[in-house]
Length: 351
Picture 1 (cartoon, rainbow, N blue to C red):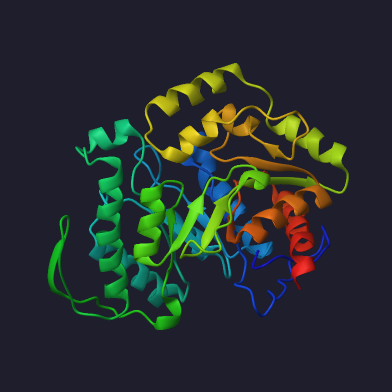
Picture 2: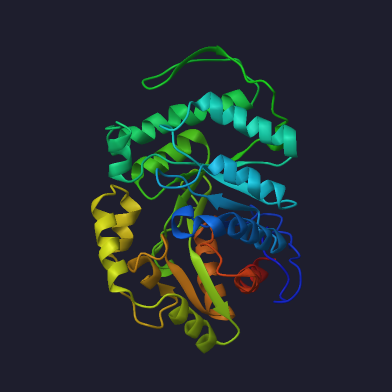
């Protein structure tokens, strides 16, 4: 959803213009994870989710990357070939490929498909994954490395001949071919949940993405020196009871999932993971809902309730300065339409 769509569950998305004085609000969905879907069904599920997201007017779709998942660049090609405007938001981990290769991939997609790529720059990951790849770089230094990595990519894509000598990377008179058209320059995101991540976002000049606390507890990011966004799921309906009935059905309590979440917390040094894990369980009807995260069904909190309730929560994030929203994996095409209505109502007072 680019800003938001029309207030009509059944109609096609009709993006609305953001207020003239405000940065446009961009909304992304998320691609299913290959580790959670049978291999013979996965390709079609990716296509379905991509088409739902495209039809709902989403700006793009997050494509995960870690040692257990399919290659995000190949999935991005599948997404582009089955949609008309959706932009892959590709997770990029420095230990997987050289910065020149990332720049080359972005430029190649632009040449072949005239489609913009977004980059989700990843500093860390699961400890076991990093150990298997012989990466023992401390948490904050991984962000220092990511700054060097991303600046090389951005300079190559800007058409520079790059000579760079840093702590982690060195290149000499490196130039990208084919060149990238300026209108295809990628959006760049990075985790901003830690101080190191936020500092890196400012150094790179990119969008810092957070796994948010409840809106009433979020500090303003209007003066933080960079664009900011949140990763959050949405379940919204006209009636509050209908939203919660769907939420409880889709995300029932799961003791095995809770134990898996506890184990995952032990093998991750991500600050956001610890922050969410440490939040107290809210009341059953709080619109900020952590049960899917606590049961290891998602990696983000959810906003649940009527369109008006969810819209009010979204509006609080907007008022705090967040302009990008990355939604969870959609459970169906209708879910994106319901989410679209909540965003439309949140943005309406700003028009």
